[in-house]
Structure formats: C-alpha cells, structure tokens
Length: 343
Ligand code: SF4
Ligand code: SF4
Image (cartoon, rainbow, N blue to C red; front, side, top):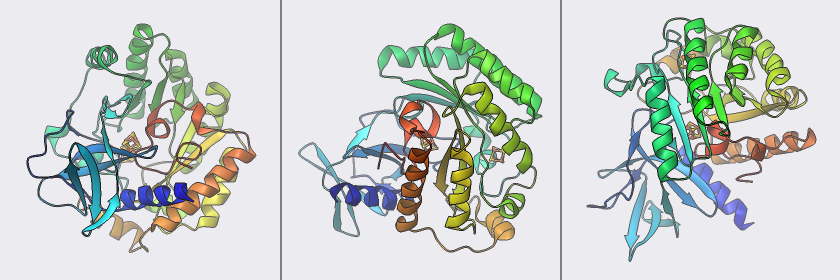
C-alpha cells in the first residue's frame, strides 16, 4: 500500500510541472541541459525518494513543486502542502544517473510531431566526436559509478550515415570498455544496420514503434515506416537475443488501453520488451501535435499506473524482466514507472 502511494507520487511528478529551488540553493552536482527525452532543452535534476527516481526541470523562480531544505534534509511540497517528506538529489553521469547517455546528433530530417530534439536551439547541439564520447566516459568511470553507456541520435542526413556513426562510436567504446553494456537507440531501415550495430559491440537495441495505433503513428511520424520498424524489431531479437530489444510507445495521442495491451502481447510474445511513455506537451511541440493528432484527453496518474501494471503482467507472462536490461530509459527510470524496478 505504501509502495502504491509512492508510485502514484512518481506518476504525479512525471506529469506535473517543474521544481522550484530554495533561494540561494547550491546544487551539489553539475546541472545538465538535455537534448533528448521529455526534459529536452531545460535545466533539470534527478530527485530520488523511496527507491524511485524522477528527472524534473528546475528553476529558482517558479515550479509546481517546491524543494525545501531544512537542516540539510530535503523535502518537497506542492500547493503549500507536504508532498515528499524526504528526497535526495542524485548525480547524473551524462543525462542519466549511473549512465553515460549521449545524443550523438540531435539534428533530424524527420518530423515526428511530439519530438522536440531537432527543434532545440543550435547552442544545445553538442556535436560530440567519437573520441569525445570515449574520453568523457572514461573520465566519468574514474569519478563515479557508471553501469552502462547509451547512444541516441536523430537522422541528420541519411539513415545509412547515422547508423555508420553509431557503429564507429560503438566500436571505439567497445574497444576501450570490453565489459560495459552499450545500448543504442537508432532509426534503422535495413537488417544490415541491426547486424552492424551488434557486430560493433552493442548489447541492447531500442527501436521505437511510437504508437500501438498505425493511424496515429502515420499522423504523428509521417516520415517513418511502421511495418519496417516491426520487421526490424523482430529481426533484432534474432541478433541481440530475447529481452535485449526494447520499443517505446508514447501514450496520450488518442490510442486506447486495449491497443496498448495488444501491442504488449505482440511484443512480449516475441521477446521484445515494450516500454510506455506519457506524451509531454510543451510550447515547442504543442502546435505540431494539435495539427496532427488534435486535442486529446490529458493523461492522468491513474492511467500511468494502470499501464505500468499491465506492462508488468505481460512481461512476467513471457518471462521478460527489465532488470536484465542495463541501458537507456529502462536502466535510467527517470521518466516512467518501470515494471520490476518501480513496481
Ligand atoms: S526520428 Fe522522429 S523521434 Fe527520432 S529524432 Fe527524428 S523526429 Fe525525433
Ligand atoms: S528515462 Fe530516458 S529520457 Fe528520461 S531521463 Fe532517463 S534516459 Fe532520459
């Protein structure tokens, strides 16, 4: 019961606004600005409580949640009422706690309605080289706990070139860190891409189907190929192994719970771990979302929790477990309720 209370609080934090910091509060760690994920573009920090962690945008001026510091103990309020009696701030390695997660190129020639990465200001485009990524990972490992390294990217020029970039980066990382789990989240269009990534040394792959509803997918991701993603997900299981392939769905775009459950069944029965992420609407993506998928009912904490429980049941039915994955969003856990980790 107590666990449910804290899971609900995590769901409310995921859906809610930012965190206001106390005046003069000095952060114990470097604060990062992400170029991917729901917090892309804003300064954010990772807060942890009772075994859960969540990444929130932070500001000294305003926020739905308010961080309170009292005798070195941190707590959080909302609307003047106590919300979390004890909270900690977790260090991030790069983008994620205990994980070096790099966006190797945020530029993208595609136009997914919900995606803000390609729309961020050029000053946020870090354009790291492979050597930068290896060096930064090595430095991080020397200073703090790093369980894995992960790579994501938009498609700047062509899918082939993007995959080549992943492959060169993964090869260098693998040479330098023979044992470290390496996760990749590319857009791929042929089987050779999947094989090349595995041969370079990647251990986990994430190919996002984005929506369980093909019509919604076609509106939200007009440049991507639904059937090809499914085909390559199935192929990836042969190459990477069952439970080492993941695929995300964004919910809150007009799909039903039944459609999500059907996709859970389809994926889990084939060794693919499905993940689900609530839509995040902000000033950067709201007009694209309105013109493609229209106004949709807001996601509430109840739905986040219901889908996470459904996801856990389906994973268990097919003997899949998120604790065997060590990269990307499953390992990070900052933006979703992750089965077997949060619930
Ligand atoms: S393929 Fe779509 S989701 Fe991925 S970076 Fe490009 S626009 Fe964003
Ligand atoms: S859960 Fe994924 S998108 Fe969210 S902060 Fe972690 S790595 Fe980034």
